[in-house]
Image (cartoon, rainbow, N blue to C red):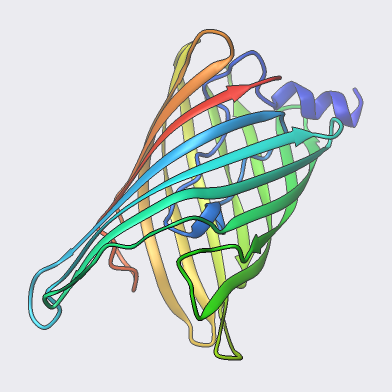
Length: 264
């Protein structure tokens, strides 16, 4: 069995609802979110909501954020995939000790390249790199950019279970007033998908993010549950719910609603 044939065997085809991790978190344009280990030609729209409530002393802080992200992938060959993503619209209502703001913005975007390899008859692995493109109308006096490298894994366990996830290392970088403020952030995602029917699968897992530099701290520890449904004509839809339980990121709830199309 060839390397390419092995990778193709474990990678989803024909509208498999257990098709890989759904992008989570609150970073722009899915920056820092581990992608699917398998390449594909597809497109998806992600509608993300995030809620933060800190109504006790001394903060009196709360926010509601909504973002629409569009991502497209093109499979160059059986092992290589190019993807682009952009936040088409972002809206945030923020109340901070009585000061209220609700700006709307467009951008930024990301560009990524991925290589997928076979790691066994039922296992596929990938390496990827991603760049955050500083096209963002929300930042008037500076811009945000960054680079990311990572690896993904997909492993079939019998006919109904799929284990997937990966590791990411990102450098979010803010340039303001000629000064560069960079961080080194690592992430790890692990989850299990169960095919309930040929057209529906449910998943559960954990997403952990750590800031390595300039100071070491836990950014977030986030249990997540998800469900994905196959629709007619190669379309699919999915729901992701994340509930952060620890870390310096005080977001209380993150939800994602997905609508996608798979050409494979």
